[in-house]
Length: 483
Ligand code: SF4
Ligand code: SF4
Image (cartoon, rainbow, N blue to C red; front, side, top):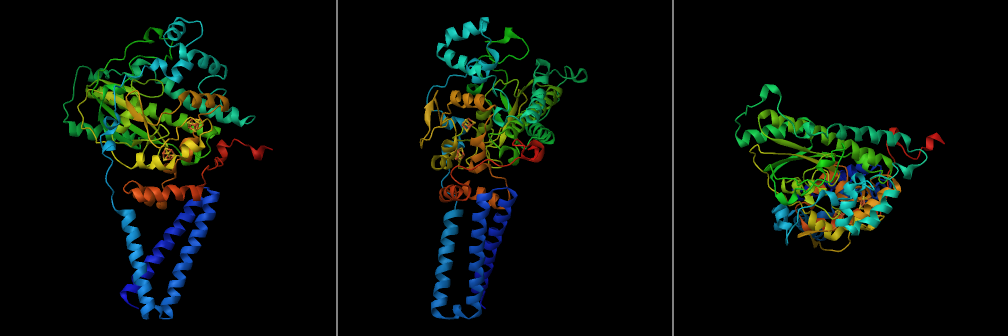
């Protein structure tokens, strides 16, 4: 045996082991279709390895033909590896963050026009109701119809009737946390009397290390810093939770120049059930965690002697996704969510804005824009056709994006009684970060060819319209056991 033939054997053994790890990963992910394909793939890879050993044993590679085939095999493998691993030209637009997406005049978003604020805060017959629809008559008929379906989640859990009760109870339990933390003394904290009037002098480097470390210690999975682009702050308050109607329509002033933005991972298992009720438990659980982290982080910064405001489910001063993009947490995907390298779109985002001087992070290019151009899976699977299937983004309010139709999406939520999350579930970036998926993510974040190959592979292994999965027993929604 020569070194050349040994390298070939080791290479084939490694690919068979990766095939085996993918097969195990699919079983763990409870992906039935992918498990079958992964098993066939593993069989093929193992057969190739065994066949190679057989050829080695009979001395085939000692013949001229055998050596020629072996060398040709090496050339093909090296070429494929080079094509998949080589870092292709970066997306300069992504590296500029949201500045790279701005293509015209951007008007700040008015929170009053946001679907949740319209549904939750505007009460028919109230002064605000009349004032709003006088200004925006185009929303009135839609909002009237949508209100008949109920609040943001319609009649919660409706899709899983008659067994939705426990999952609705769990959702409401998590939802209670952000509400508890939505008073101004919670989101806009004063320092403890011990620290009142004192300011700790910290270098931006030290302050950055401390706030990031603290956020992580409280449960944030990803943390980044950005200088705030005022375009992403809401212009006027529209969400009212404590009868503080004097705040409705109040201008939101730019008072901070930095944002500490963080994300928490949503459970792969729970999101996998979307659009069924476990996915809404997971969304609300993550919002609760976000409120918990943001509130403590704001108090931490206030006790350092600086101004800080927490942004979470029950109090936003800004749009979270653009801030997260600028803070280098990921890129904006076709489905309208942030897509991160670590967890794909399976995250929820929160933030603290502050005047504490910090070191901003740089936006990242992880290949999302290019991947979304070829993938379109979320658009294909969206039951309300709310995600545009066109190849390229369009300019909406001065910035480039695939514009989600919030009205049709929100209407679908109202019908099924959950926040759906099908788009999040089917996104190829959402797979659990098992060893083989980590390899795939490493390749697609750096290489265009890999994106094209793995986009097709995802359709083959998981299907063009992947099915939702069973939930953990404690959150089951079909209640087959109950009969
Ligand atoms: S499903 Fe595909 S197109 Fe949609 S966000 Fe994910 S990668 Fe982009
Ligand atoms: S949440 Fe559901 S309805 Fe809304 S865009 Fe995603 S897939 Fe479509």
